[in-house]
Amino acid sequence: MKPLTTEQLLDLIENRLPPAEEAAVRARLAVDPAAQAELQSLAELINLMRDDDSVDAPEYVIARAVRLIRPIAPAPAPNLFRRIVATLLRDSRQMPLAAGLRAAQTTPRSLAYSADEYELDVQITSRAGFWQVRGQIFGADLAGVVTLANADQSVQAPINELGEFDMPPVAEGVYTLRVALPACEIVIERLELLP
Image (cartoon, rainbow, N blue to C red; front, side, top):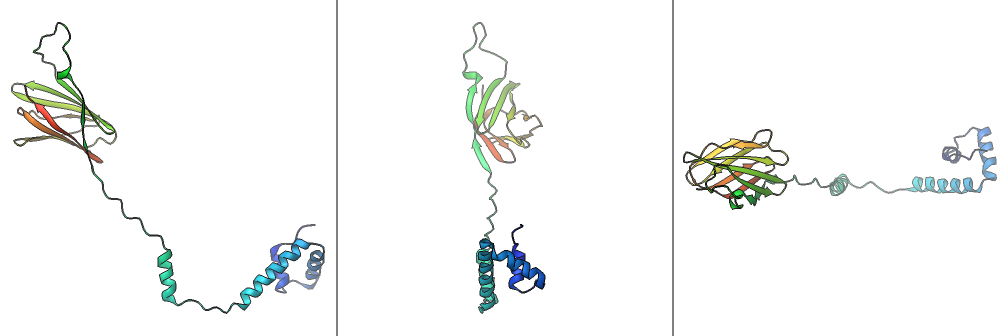
């Protein structure tokens, strides 16, 4: 025998069942204590709803309650632009020369830097009284511009799809190298282009 459904019990309470079906439901209720308990709970709930004489709150109270419950929209995230100062990891000028090599080498000076999640490889070459700075940046989202500047001069070069840059030649001096990326700026504060 299938148990009585809540809909059948509600129809019985509301007197919506045809006489034959009502008799069948009452006969099944007589032998089912769980259905009797559910019928009594439903009848009490319906009577409570019918006896409810409470008044709706005024519109301004409801509007204020809705405003209080509404989640506060998160503040827009500030456009944080990080400035990272690069740390020198290796300088080929400070490495000892291999046996048999002369001191006056023409190979580029190689500098390796670390800047949080980025790595920089910078090559410095002296040519005809000017200094050539080239390099490559390793990391994510490398679209940007590299600027080499001091008090007298400033030059820029784009970063290509491989993270490489090639600066125009500059006069000797102490420079600041800035790598402007979408998420941050990497700075080499003191890049010495000196003999």
